[in-house]
Image (cartoon, rainbow, N blue to C red; front, side, top):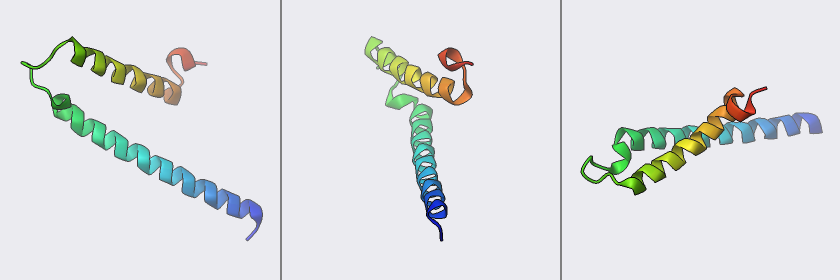
Length: 74
């Protein structure tokens, strides 16, 4: 096996590991969203809105990067 083949194999392994980690995070976030971020309507306050807005902003940044939209548009 050549060094280039070994490097490609290591890169593929690292890519798959990163993808699996992202998939796990997305599944956990989806479950948390389905549970309304563990809140009830009576509990909601501006702190919850701020936290959720922060999550949204971070996810929008990632989404814009992935799809080349927003400030990442070409």
